[in-house]
Length: 376
Image (tube, rainbow, N blue to C red; front, side):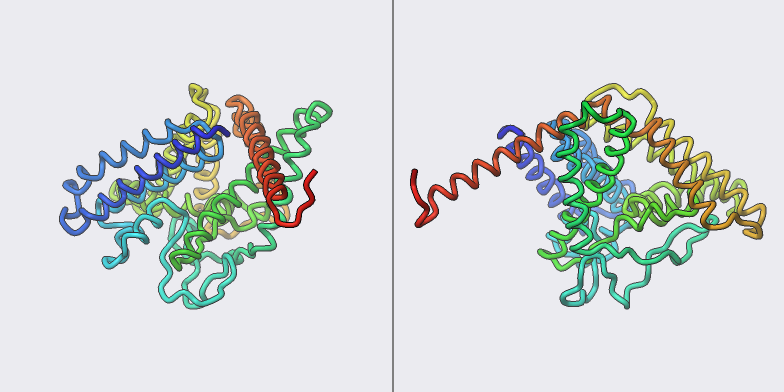
């Protein structure tokens, strides 16, 4: 990783902070609605442009996700007085900036010494869709903690070393390793960024994953277990407006079907944009196809549940095997090969090597100047 990339990274985030300070300043002077939206749109456009200044898969990819997707969606909600940025009228500027672009939510009266991802007993559990209605999430609370994340960090480090022998490993197995690498690295990145905000600002860590390999249906996987932060931001920005629109046409019960499918269409567009930031290659449609297939299948699944009134269900172990097999098969077919096409893996390994070399040089320099160290 070159020094110029780090400088660009710092410049980009200084511009992000300045833009969010502007949004914070207008919240009490510009009324909610179209007028505030017009004042917010230049920031939205800026956040779509800024990731183009970064080429690092780690720095650029994380920045693109945080500002071009997460922050922009929250700002669009903020323009209409909705979402986390409008929940507390007395929100401070540091909290406003952090909540805008990080996977966190404000916690009132945070308990002391709370371990990572341990929810306050007074805080209601997250909500999710169940046949289109909002219900409490019955799935188990995530168990992730410092030890869990440490183990996953070690696994990522081991995978990086295994890639040195990729010439002796079957290409299909390499893609499997990429799948675990992406999952662990995404979870670690989101958790670390949220934990830093929690430590500095006293805000609650929002759980990101809930054992997705235990999913028993596509609805369970996408709504309650995989990348919960994205599900939460897509719900008020896409799902609810679409459901309300179609509710007047076909009734609330069936309006959930186009709302679910529309949510996956928007998710497909945003993922295509994220991969463009990562690889700067023209979209081939594979990522869109992946989410359209899953959106269609999930829509059919919900429709069948409605038609059958949940009277007939497959055994959990069988539905779990079928769900995980379907997700993994379609991901290996359409999603993960995109990482190789964009050469994200090659550039990521170059960054790992650069960071490793920097750490070795830093440690050698520290040993040379350490008092009492024998000089050669």
